Length: 347
Image (cartoon, rainbow, N blue to C red; front, side):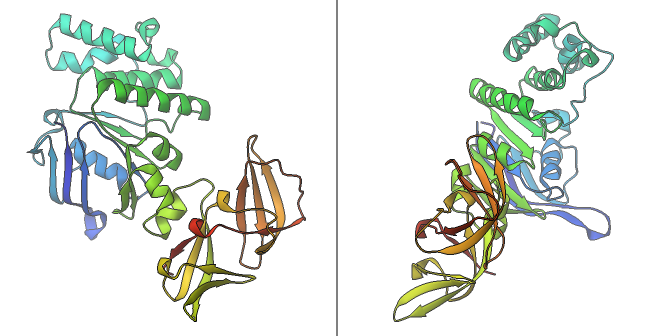
């Protein structure tokens, strides 16, 4: 078992500045957990505390049922892959892969076997005698991952490992890491600020803000049922549209009023009074018979879909459509949304 449990975990720096507040999180055995959030939210600090690279201020960390607060990083049975690869530039790929095993005085035959297995798994057989400077960014990242694999740890920790790669290589490496997880059947904790990586990779994602967990759930549950306005705005590309509205109840029927648009709502889904109305860009229906009047300002064609940036009495908004757009900037449209696709948040 390699379950990771964080209990009331806190991290404070000088002058009482706290970056992680009372974090409670359980990462199940063999789970791929993604910590996601904006820069400075505490996700990398949390990962470094799990690894033992940062001292915790209070709380406990347990790995496989054992509290590891006072254990050195080398004794925690974890392996970490860093953003900057952290390879030894004067050592070959083979020597980089074998280095940690040599430090542990692993027998030479065992080192050779593990290095060969990792190289085969990551497609590095043709590069074993090259130096890091002779490799591409994606190949260097594979070596960094391979160096973690040869240790056969209970838990893999990834700290934004793909952020230095171009878009195509990032997509390919995401797929490789998922295949690796399926093959190794091990616990992985992955830190990123990229919500696309979070949505496509995690069994569950943990959304963080200002050192606190906002929501932990499977990716589609977070997307379809965000816990609050921050989660709704952070997860999704383009982000959710938000409008200031007001709920009115008359003769048992509830309606929501936005500037230039009034529509019925289920009274159970919201509270009476001022609300924030959230609508995903893909949930807008164009050219509806009745709804919100808007004017197209910019059209962004993305191949299989288009983004329409518009101005309306309720405020600026973005709509996404997979249909061929036969309109141009300056055209007027009428927008509507199915009631089940509306989200309401407390102002």
